[in-house]
Image (cartoon, rainbow, N blue to C red; front, side, top):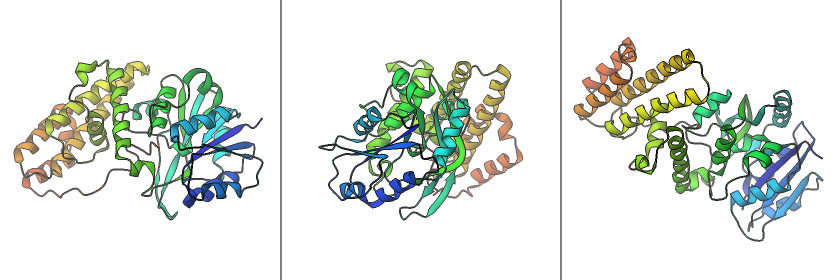
Length: 367
């Protein structure tokens, strides 16, 4: 029986498929099986799969396209390994990925899910940016409220808790089924990331994250449900808060966006409430919890000031409201000399329209 089962689902993925498969076959850790599900492809995917003569590869062919989630569950049910590794058909695993992950999981038997940091890759394969993800269990559990701190192609999961305690991918989710599974695992078992950059994640126009706008809607709904469960909100509490996860992410990550001051204030205090509840759930020592809360307040306050500085509106009243909210969250951060300089710039009108796109880590890659 192999120690690792690699599960890949592919649909019309001929452009990058061979590169992805070769990255698995070239692993320094050799004790694995490779389960590939062809989800009803109509391009040259089957020809590529038939070209491999490696006994470790098992190809399952769906008679029709049934979607990523159901295909992955079909592959998981076929997998026999102690550990299950995911690989997408357009990403690349570095040669020592499995070697490093198996060694960590052998040394840390309490960890059920292990990811890695990753490198963003252009469609043609050139590297764009290295993204270092959190590694600590509690930090990862916290970040799951904000965005997805795991890359689907980088995870390795213990088979026993997956099948006997957590369950497989929830088939009601078409796009962010990975985020839902990571949350379910993190809520009852330990999770971690390796700091090493062991996966290259390809961003291209055909990738799921960039193609389906409703994938973002599904992901937003999952985050809102997770926040609501932790804060004990009911259906009435959720009314009018559909965009709250996006506002929280924008505020936490520090992206200037076109949100009203009242909406940002609501997000700021939801974040602080969430932190208090999370600290209790995580068993964080009160002194450490207070220290973390001060850091969170400083972060929120400074990001509100940055929103004030880069506000697209000439409306001084809106800037004043943003600044008042920043002051209410953390007076100490406002009185920092650098922050005061930014405040002066905001009200002097020397702001710069903010054009930078969102950081790659926020909201994904969740698929």
